[in-house]
Length: 111
Figure 1 (cartoon, rainbow, N blue to C red):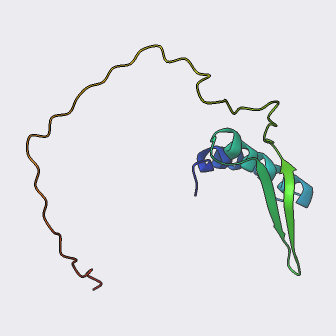
Figure 2 (figure 1 turned 180 degrees about the vertical axis):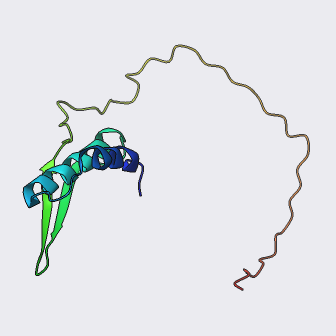
């Protein structure tokens, strides 16, 4: 169960009913997945379905694109020196003590 699972489960629990048609089931699963997508920014934007029947399996990929990536409208690279430096503050670091020691490799415990 991933980060969008709570939103998806809320859809299942509120809308599932016995004897649903295949199309009703697809719509329910689509809505549950979309609920997870829209409630978690890291979930992506594609809804993929897998319909499992007694004698066949259908992968519907992508079933729906809920969120598409925007396109850049211009160039976002700036030449060196084009951004103004408003202030500069340099804080010197005093090294009070320095110790160098060799670390011996240790075997990893596997049992």
